[in-house]
Image 1: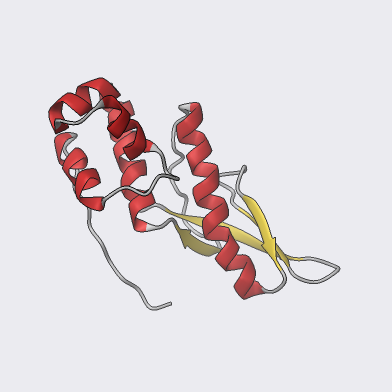
Image 2 (image 1 turned 120 degrees about the vertical axis):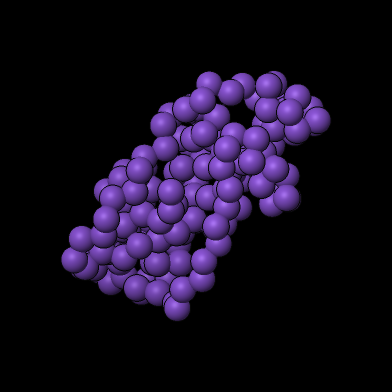
Length: 142
């Protein structure tokens, strides 16, 4: 799955833009101009999705962008962690079981699932392989 979600930018009467995400209603932000609002949107989206993981909620599947909406992607490591979380949830794999397969502590797996913790992508990739997934990285014109 591609972890890029459509956002809605709304010009504010007093200037600037507010940003919301139809698929992730908890992600709200804004900026003094369009560029700043879009930059803030990535952080707001990642923060809201971290809350989903913390609350053990299902990660919403991104919808297709409608006319006038912008797609906002989470950072690559965050996307990898979200994929790991979704697969573990779907397959009923516990943190303890994954830790055993990886040869690490359960605390290390907790850090892997913490979107705010700086994890090495190598370990996240190893964990994804254990749950039958792999990463694909693509670049696009900004």
